Image (cartoon, rainbow, N blue to C red; front, side, top):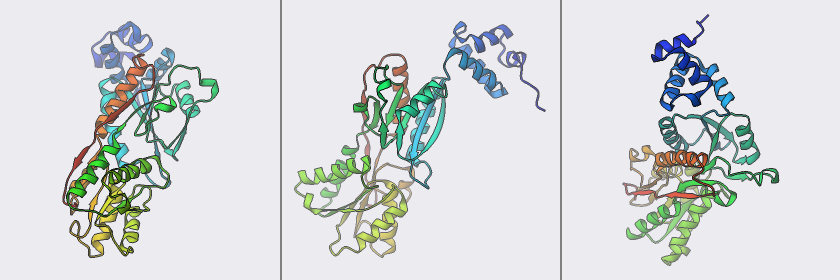
Amino acid sequence: MAKRVTLADLAEQTGLNISTISRALSRPDRVSTETRRLVEKVASQLGYATNIAARNLSRGTSDTILVLAPSFEGQAISPVFTQILLGVCEEAKSLGLNVMLQQCLGQTVSASDVIRHLQTGVADSVLLVAVENWLPPTDGHAGETILPVVSIFRDLTASGLTSVMTQEADGYVAIVDHLVARGHRQFAFVSGPEGMHHEQVRYNAVRHRLSQLGLDRKLVRLEGGPFDMPSGQKAAESFLALKNRPSAVICCSDALALGFMHAILDSGLRVPDDVAIAGFDGMDYTAFTTPSLTTVIQPTLEIGRVAVQVLTDLHNGRITTPRLVALAPSFVIRQST
């Protein structure tokens, strides 16, 4: 049986007195922030976690951010979300906070579930990542102060949540302008899941920009799927069956674009000579495909960091009304166009 970790063990490892260790665990308000964080770090490393949990319970906080990430049935959490999580973890670590990840098997999250997490002390604050359906608080919570909840990738300010996201429409305007400058006049859009918010925003951005250029009647919408490569491959089959194929294809995600491109190349067509293809997200691997993929890079790391900073502002009362923070993407031209 492993030896039980004692206050004396913590004192030996930190160089602090036992009385200081005890205060840091039971009365953290009586010691400096640096001392508290040192004691908690060493306690966690030595397995004194249950004592920390008891201390957090006594002072009514867990110093934990709960990240709720939805996923499609049968799929793991999106690689785009894991990039955001890296930014969240880096910023949380710098602030002495913990991060807990929970996968949501579905696209709906209710305020009552979030409030329950907060009330039971599982977490002090919550990040919602690309939640498709948010069920607002019931009337019983309508008069409460603003929830320590931030929405990532979805503007839910109208529903009372401060939100951090990418200026998605700007990215698609850049794609359209680039393809038009290359001489393309007929376009296809490979969609995400029908009816999903991001799919609608991205498709509408493409259609609106083409309309401004007098080319909106030159756009064909191809049914894709849940932002994965097999869905892109399926969309390519529909594309190859067209009598008049567009010369440029704009995809709702990088994964859709790569699945589409793989099927196009397998058919004997050339990219970009016969078909130019562009994606969206800016995943690292898109620079190493053959051909490499033209795409819009979302500032995922920065979004994660900013989301944690916004949560801190909520806790400290510096944000009292829902706020939208929209970060600019980057457009990268590669071999596929």
